[in-house]
Image 1: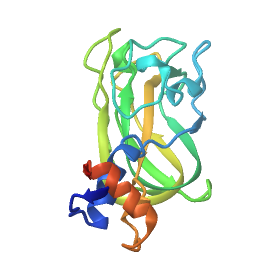
Image 2 (image 1 turned 180 degrees about the horizontal axis):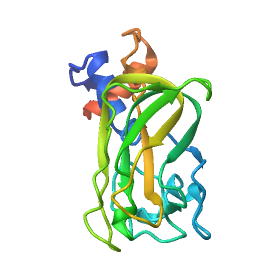
Image 3 (image 1 turned 30 degrees about the vertical axis):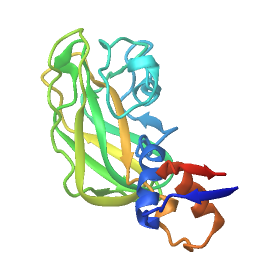
Length: 218
């Protein structure tokens, strides 16, 4: 009995690209960030609800998706009109941008004028080139909204991000927002690194992806 194997034409780079797509589909989201502010909090509003996914689909952090109408349990409203909001990324990242959902209850309370800064140590902050200087007012009061998405001129190395809030959209009740999630530069897929063509791992992966057919000859 003889077993014939159909020819395979598949480079290492192509194989790496194919395998890397699924692995990196959600790799850009920076997880487990925390937030603090010097702007106070209205009633039981908690700044933590702006980074924990509350109000997003399945109440899970994401860079996309609509945010439900803002409440005291899924958004934040400060008692001050201006001040600082600081985000701890809990790690060092190549920060590429972010998604932002402005306050969508009384929408005039949403952040308007802002300076976006980054820091590697939580003490010295630098304004990020290409970051927004104004957030749009939410499209509607008390209804779900989609995010604004921002990409910087080039990625910056950061462990902390700060919003220096300069104004809101003319509310006299304070300033707030619903959610923010940060976007890092995706890692290079390991499969794109050099792999010897003769390695047994490459051969096995190639068989699986190429759908090689075996023909038995008696």
